Image 1 (cartoon, rainbow, N blue to C red):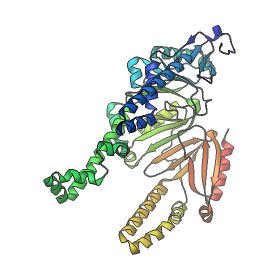
Image 2: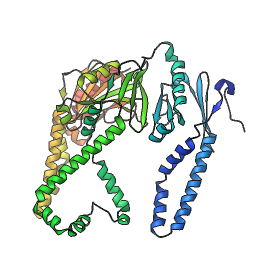
Image 3: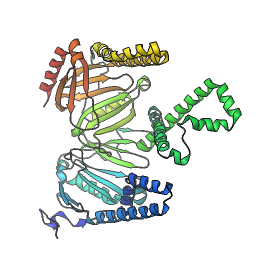
Image 4: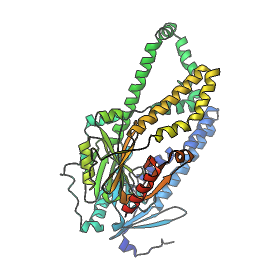
Length: 492
């Protein structure tokens, strides 16, 4: 049966398939998604039914290989004079036509295996997907991917009025050297490796006979060497300090490894439609953020990072990045001047050093304390019958209140021309830049506690994914209503 067409096939172009090596890369992707099958095979092997396990492996491999081959055979794309058409699906077919003048840009991604094989994943970004993949070619040659991007850029309607900056010779708007990359990784302290180890031992610990999260495991090791056990018990404080130091070193190393893998070779360039970002060690991504689609900007930091005058710049956009999120990192670690330069390239004014911050009400802390009051009663009851538990609960409540007070000390907002600036957090410090024309809705939120204090929260609705929580807490109710009306009047 012939495929339905809305144009003559010759006008749309001859059909093309994904690269034949997709049969290998696609099979690898299918294998990664068969977690349930691996569990069943492992159960059969551990229970002594090795023959059944081997048969299950053979059936799964055959099924996945046939599925990948049929998908590859049925997937076609055609490149015409004014559009690209993608025909996909096995039982249910989809025929998607994407005019060149609707494509904002072409994003190219290469995973480790794809880089070795000279392949690339291509995504056509139009903004009309509602978060789903719009037009994706999962595996074509890198040369063909670059040809398609050059073709789209030359034929879209913007090319008639906008000329790209020559990227090969132009200086980058922002880039990261290896030293700064390592420093960014140290700031991205993470103990995720322990979470992964915990999950692994909970799943396979009994089979492997290895569970470092079980105290009996360590006692069994120590019992095999009495001098070592006696030394550790005799130097408990030193052992605790050494353990904490190991955690810090492992957390810093984990953060550095993750950052190097993600942001190696980070480079930001100005093009005719936006900012082009290239990064990645094993998986190399090449993504363009159209300036016209940027909705909000967040300048993030932390106590130590802020003290050393380092910032991170993210932009919320209608365009999706390589992970299908609308939150784009434009500068993982930057100085204030670099942040201002990037905002300037987006035609956004830099954030003033003293924009005239208006502090939110101290009821931000008091209302939180009232919400925690039931836990205070629990702590007092435990203090009578179980003093240590009561003290622990009281200490935890005190810590929560202290963090709330520190957060209140930095929470403020300011009007800066046709936009609003919102500063929040003490540990995770954020300065959010919201142009009024990008604000789609403003919600005024109250509950029975905030009404008693005469305050309200303003929640801003902004298009694009990847970021949430654009809000101003604990504003006097009358001021909140005036600010809401002002921002809505300033909108488009």
